[in-house]
Amino acid sequence: MSVKVEALAKEVFVAPPIRPIPECLKRKAAEELNEKEANVAEELEMIKTWMRQSGHIRGRIEDQFLLGFLRSCKHSMERVKEKLDTYYTIRSVLPEVMRNRDPLDPFVRQVIKMGVTVPLPKTVNPDDPKIILIRGDAFDGDVCDFPDILKVFTMIGDILLRDDDQMMICGQAAIIDLGHSSSSHLFNFNLSFLRKASILNQQASPLRQKGFHFINTPKSFDLVLNIFKGLMTEKNRKRTIMSHGSSLESLHRYFPRSVLPAELGGELGPVQQYVDEWEQRLIDNRAYLIEEESLGVDEGRRRTTNPLAEEKDLFGTAGTFRKLEFD
Image (tube, rainbow, N blue to C red; front, side):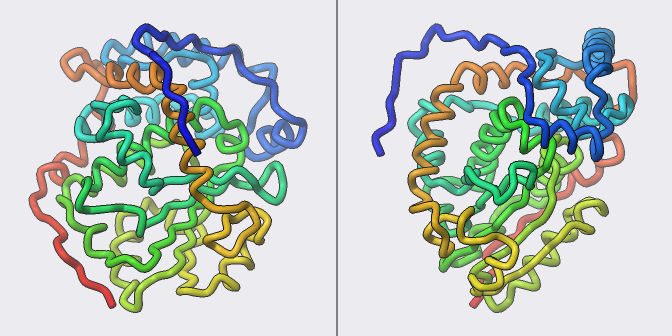
């Protein structure tokens, strides 16, 4: 599929108003996330006031963006404040992920084209968790490193946070396909970075995980899974974590063929079409993604305790996983 590229040198992102949502999502938000429509406008104003008065946070104050955090935190104002502070604090210490996010940059675009992270378009029910496919064998370690993959992952996540109401209300389930590639390159990175990445994707992220399903796993996968679980929050360790080996039949008990691409025995057609669609979608949102680079925290102006203060020793840890070989 060809990807349209237009001149975007002077484009400016304009925040849209809050979107209306279907009745099924309204019910779920009310029942599971404590959402009361009549209170949302007041809650959003309280968050904006807190952000302006914080002194140290350079963050977005668009209603739709902040509503995602309200939903993620079940409308607890204290949890929203903590998550927003963590969200911008951890991003400020990950320049290798949060800088140079231009989807038209030749190198960044090459990483996007790999299609390691692929949001799938369908669910069985409109209020089911959305499905994210992570393709381990699409990661070419000779071309890029893990931080480059995480960069594109966060770019996609930023668009989903802003645009996908089902994702924000119902959460997401991850299918992690390790394919037929060697898994050694997945663990060729600094342990300190790995810890930061886990904070970015758990404590800081408003995208709520509902389950992790591994497919096409190597024989010695228990080692990988133990490392994976060790980096999880206690809350995420209680989610569904399934290793299906190479059994598509096992995977289909959780995800029917109607919501899966052909590569996983599904009816959605080849996954490449969704890789191409997301390449274009990131290009279409170029201004928004580049603007994210200017956001973060100014620790010199902080009046509160850094939410990551207890992580300082981990952030200084030296060490690297290198060349873990699996059969």
